[in-house]
Length: 376
Image 1 (tube, rainbow, N blue to C red):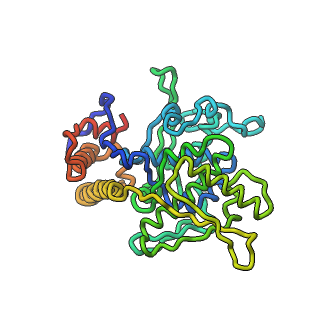
Image 2: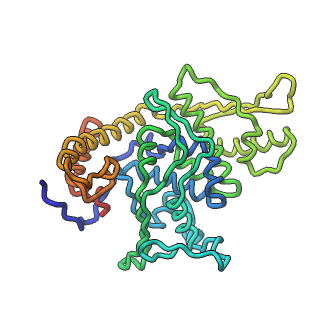
Image 3: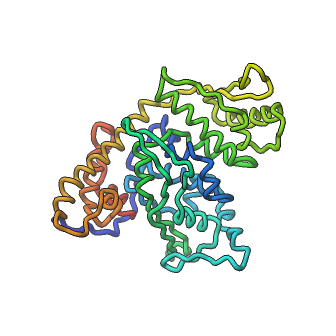
């Protein structure tokens, strides 16, 4: 048995993997979140836009975090997402009714602010898919009834930094599975920009639906069949009370044009839904931008190699060492537990970072890799 790891490492730069310019703005977003976007609103109501922003913030952070434990401050969240800190720190409207009980975490922290309450309900609830979500991985069809977001949520106060709140989140195994094999690629900066101003949430949702077609075109190539999306399916994402087909078309056109101004990598055209009627239209989305596929594939292979090597270690060493133990963790439980085999996990990650994928990097220090694992 190896000696236990000493914690309390000094603060180090955890940006171990320099992101190529071509891919730095792209993130992986779970396909269930994108394709079941309406279910987020069903589950979280008025908090839906912030819920979606937090989910994509987690996806952004995961690009340099292999253990699905995220430690952050509200200042860091706002820098990444463009939110205003003071708006998020206001009391959540649900507590304006004095009869609404204020939730507390195990450490006694009261959940009052908009940001804290939104995180809390994301911890308490899953995203439920009433009709289910079906997806295929390695030719095997799977069905999800819900997506659990967090396993744990802690909110602490750093007394050495003017009582700054620290948020500690452990993401669920389903988020882990989605990050590895069930995702679409999306431009995070575009998503962030589209959220600003009136109608921002609708623009963000419409943009995510467009990304489904962009990703499908890339993955299916010559087998891709361009769908015609009825205007009536898109009008709900547009700030408009239009009733007539002509006015609905104009409202959808205005929103699509506003998205193109920020992300000019697709075009569209309106097509009559039937030969017998020129009143009802559909929209054909035409991707005109090719994702940096080779670079993104390299990132995917890099991530897969890390987790395959970690899983091999788990099976070959951890399981064998605990063969007769009643307290054995499953792979994901072992992965997120920073008290189990942290030094060996760090050595595996360090080895892969320095391997064929990132040959041009200088040697990565074990201390830096350990600090990422231990959250210091």
